[in-house]
Image (tube, rainbow, N blue to C red; front, side, top):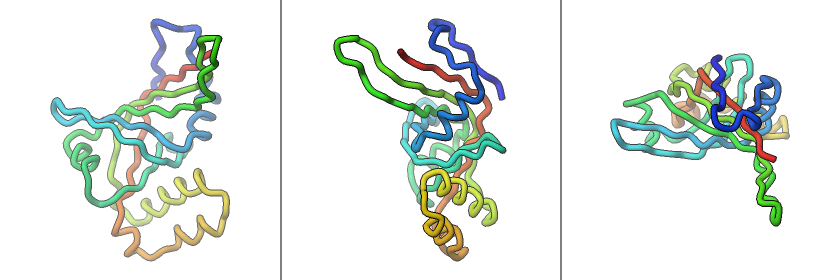
Length: 161
């Protein structure tokens, strides 16, 4: 995975792969930007991070604007932010963020859909019963949704304060 380096504020750059991993591990949603021809589109989705494949998994409806955009152009840019807030009277903001690029793919294989949903649920949920109950649903439940995988190809991190 290529790491992009900050040009204008190198003192804020996060270069540690472990720190970047922690931001992705701790985050709950990603803001994803897409483009078709000259038209931009941004959407916020909850995700699950799979460090072994360096991918994020999402689920969505089988229909919608994001799928229309991804069908034309699967290359996306996204961000995950750990925001601890603005510090009043100091004129600073405490945060860590990662910006990453990659290819977003609609998963068609039921076994990989199950895997993607297990990654997402284990990332977001605490109760094992909730996770197992959802993952063990029938193939019909998986055929009524889409599971997306964003394979990260380039990433950089930044921190403030």
